[in-house]
Amino acid sequence: MNISDSKNVLIINAHQYYPFSEGKLNAAFVDKAVTLLQGKGYNTRVVTMKDDYDVDEQLAHHQWADIILLQSPVNWMGVPWSFKKYMDEVYTAGMAGALCDGDGRKEAAPKQNYGTGGSLTNTKYMLSLTFNAPAEAFNDNSEFFAGKSVDDLLFPMHMNFKFFGMTAMTTFASFDVMKNADVERDFKRFTAHINQHF
Image (cartoon, rainbow, N blue to C red; front, side, top):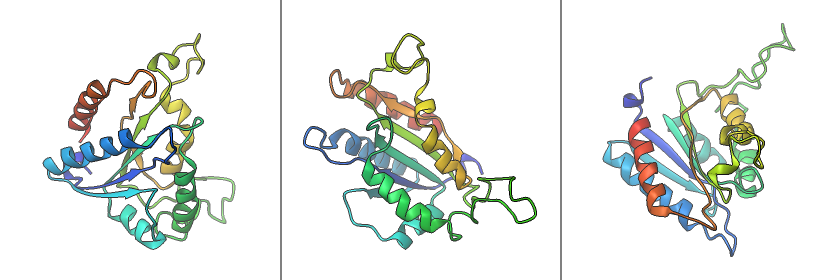
């Protein structure tokens, strides 16, 4: 599947509201993604963690999508708890066949091929992340993350999507958003990222 043939994009806003973090930036990235993608002829659907959801409907959204864009803050080195709950409910239900055929292993070889049962093999995904941490905290052995990258930190999320057969697109990250935000610059980078990869 060529990206140009991918016309359905499911955008998941994983933000969890806190009084000191209301979610305005993540919501703005979602709005910008919708505008940019619809301008390119894509169909978009948006799911937010603040809304009630039906598990079967969410599974149908994932089956409909050619690309899933996860817009999320990074809270305590991972996704917010409300999106973890969503994964526990929706993705666990998806193991019954909607997203994968079990974990990929077969009775004839019970120790092989774990994680290869995904049915979304024609689906791509993209992580778009907001960090309190500055960019300089990554990819530098002398800094907090000890030389690790953003994708290293989000390795579990990459594995979750891979479990369902999806293929990664290049991750986008906005850094230092709590203390030294440069929203205008980040929006320009995000626009360029979307234009390059979609």
